[in-house]
Amino acid sequence: MSQVYCWRCRRFVRTLTDKEYEQAHRIIKALKDAHREAAAGTISRSELDRRLAALDEEGRKLSDGESIPVTELLRHRSDHFGPPCKHCGKNLRTPRARMCAACGREKEALPNQPL
Image 1 (cartoon, one colour):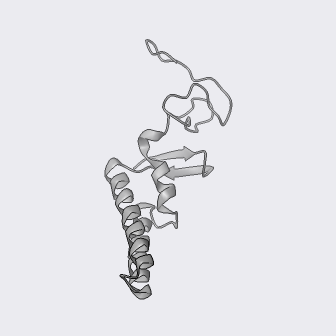
Image 2 (cartoon, one colour):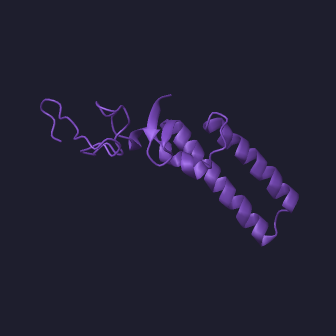
């Protein structure tokens, strides 16, 4: 588990591993299925509420107990962020970013690595 600065949330957040990312996708699919079944009338309102509560609990486990929507958690996948800025410590927005959006400094190139 690593912490990165999320520019959308404007705070440091825990990133999702590949396994957790897939789990978040399964939760979203289950949420959509539950709402679709409720709209079609195949499940009762109490059954929908029960399913939504269970899925919300799974989402809280992924976010370390915080109430963050699962769709927002999908943005915290570890390979979506760039390396930390050497000047301010906040992560670059993407792995391909050439400058830090937080402090405006250019990314320093490593030897034999293009910007």
